Structures are given as structure tokens and as C-alpha cells.
Length: 125
Image 1: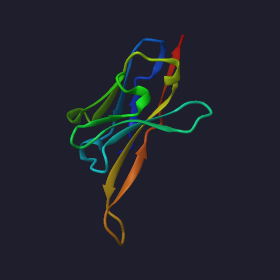
Image 2: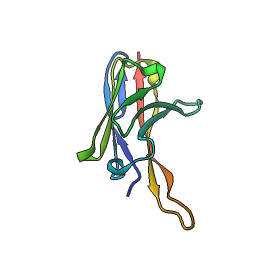
Image 3: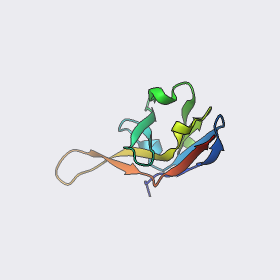
Image 4: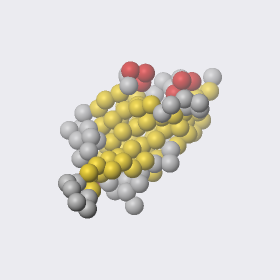
């Protein structure tokens, strides 16, 4: 139920835009560092892209600064990643990750990571 679901990927020409969505009922109660976007290109390790924190502040990897905008609509249990001025280097599978505090059997609550299945973004030129 809390596993996030990504959508909005597709194929676009260089210079175009896409808006990705990450939806999960866990978003409105996530207190473990915010909501994160990652991406993984073919043959490359997964890299962190962006995050929106509990105080609504946004963070971005240098490669996307000035082009991507992350936002959240808690009422819709959704985090968005607006991607503008797309370039071929943005081609990757994009994943959303949330971390939810959950009780443990013998100790304090722990944050567990939940990953979506990803949405493919392909930028052509």
C-alpha cells in the first residue's frame, strides 16, 4: 500500500519537458528525510537526483540544477518532478523513494525504504 508509484515518463526531444509524479499514501506521513528521486541509466549506477524535505526545501544534484523542480501536493499524496530543458544525459529510469518510520519488535521505530518500480525517460536528439 505504501509502495510509491511513478508515472509521467516517456520519450521527448532534447530541449523538451516532462513532469514525473510519485504517489504514495506514505508521503503525507513520511518523516525520514523527505521524498527522493533517483535515476539509473543503462549500465550505470543509480544516482540521486532530487529531494524535497519535510520543511519543503528542495535539493538537486548539480547535473539538474536550474532545469528540474521538485514539489509536493500532500493532499494528493504526490510529489512531482518537473523536468525542463531535457538533454540526452537525462535518459534513465527514474525512481521515487520514500522512507517511513515503522515500529520494530524490540527496539525504537526504524525508517524503512520503499521504492517504486520506476518510469522510463528517454531524451532523443
